[in-house]
Amino acid sequence: MAPRSVLIVDDEEICLTITSEMVKKFGLLAMLARDGFEAVEIFKRHGIEIVCVLLDLQMPRMNGIDAFRHIRKQDEKMPVIITSGYLTDTNLLLLQPLNPAGYLNKPVSYEALFGFLRRITAG
Image (tube, rainbow, N blue to C red):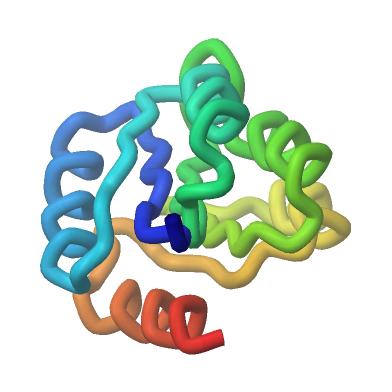
């Protein structure tokens, strides 16, 4: 089966709800993780079904950067889009070698998310 899901990783329930509705409106399925640890576990089990990851940075148990590192070990090419309300210079430096597919400011806009999803699913 072709990848048809987006893994959305965020510890804020409202962000998960709104972003998953946008992803569904685009025609993809949404898999939800509430922290980095959960994201890594879901990715291990369902990576083949996932077309991209929307990843928050500030989360309990395992932050987004550590989760991103684990995802990269499993799939070097998986598009990972960072979603954040505030990106520090330190976080940007830590993210650079992981090669994120892009950055979306929170709250995520429908237009910006669709732009990324269009590009990712077209290639």
